[in-house]
Length: 184
Image 1 (cartoon, rainbow, N blue to C red):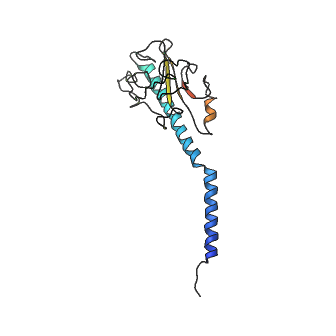
Image 2 (cartoon, rainbow, N blue to C red; image 1 turned 135 degrees about the vertical axis):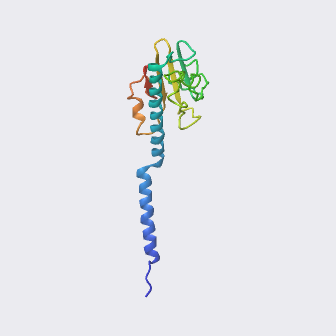
Image 3 (cartoon, rainbow, N blue to C red; image 1 turned 180 degrees about the horizontal axis):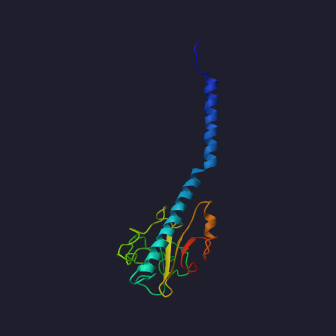
């Protein structure tokens, strides 16, 4: 007598494994997990940038939140018609973009991060959104040199983190905001 599995037994095992795999995909939702991962990266990027600007403001020889400009200046990393700021005429909402990651004040953040003690920028490069060249998901910066305040923003996409956009204390519930003046 030969020992082994019958065709029916094999089909039942394959069916059970397929059902378990389907349940795992539905429960884990890999698309949502990828969105959560990108949102975590966005929030970490803004936190690191906020710390770097704080170091610049605390130790810089000529601290400025709007390098080379006067008044309030806004910049987005992509050309977009959806500006997160009220100053739409100079970089956000005007169809222009500054996607440079240079940290000397000419990148998308108008702060010379190299102007700190030791003249070494706390960041080697400015971060860019994990979904590059997206008119929906991007980073943006606004600075006011008169009040030495700034705001950096990002759009979040996951269901888990999207509620943070309205709860961050900022003036725009459609963006996650960080900085020293969330009403810019």
